[in-house]
Length: 165
Length: 203
Ligand SMILES: [Zn+2]
Image (cartoon, rainbow over all chains, first blue to last red; front, side, top):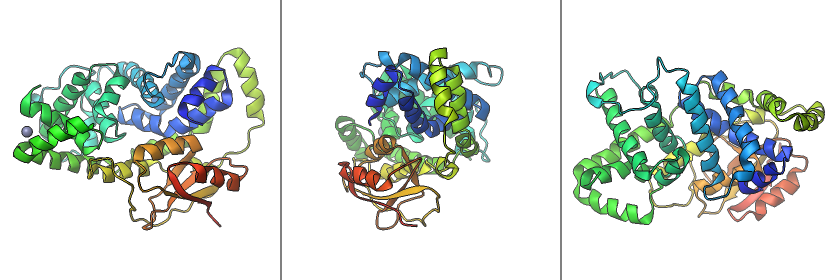
């Protein structure tokens, strides 16, 4: 059964379809949320928040996006909401100014990405961890393609500044 | 962004192999004459490889919580649904933990391999020793034209996960949860357009 067919069945309150989609997406969502800096406990809770939306809104899924970008879009929204609770330690938006970054040669790419603003981090993770195109990422984030490119461009600059040896 | 910067901005998706033909052609033209962008391709490829060198430390632990977490979700569904689920879950069979623990990162490493060949490219074999798994394992050879994305869709469709890396001869191992009739499953896989050959692994 395809993901689209599963969504149709979920809209008809088919719990087996829900379980099948849940099991299929669980590893991917866990990776996404952990990479976005959520803790394991937060990730588990947010995955269920995501599937509660899938359960309630699958009837509204119209297929102008793919199931994958639709679900990852819900995940991104829920993750940002969760990260807002970290607000004292977590820069959420804005442009990370590469000129203010202190280079640290002991950093690896993962730690460096964790230090990016969440919106930049999401673009990097969706590209490098999941292999989405910039169009798909624009669908997931619900923003123009150029915004995706700009966030990535700035993220790469900040990463270079951080990882500079 | 215009000119050089607009091309630099495309490089991450050149490296992950998702640019469309038009972007690809324009970037290829630019790369032929821009050393800075050519260096950026190298740097981005190196980062992409480093990225796939290490799974997230918490990932496996989180995967182990999948069934318990689904049970928690079920409790949050509406009361009428709740009843239906409760009955079903009371009868739930013990799950095969080994299959739950299967590492999904292989798809990621396939992606890195694909990254070095930006045009939509057929699968090729990577080298690795087989990973021992309990439960049902299917051995699958994909059609040479199959892309990483098609494999992802197929795994989702089949409800399975890749185990380890493919053998040098291109045999992939797919671990499955709760398969009552493995041979019928293999026959179903065999009919999939992306699959050249599929068989239940003998133990
Ligand atoms: Zn250039």
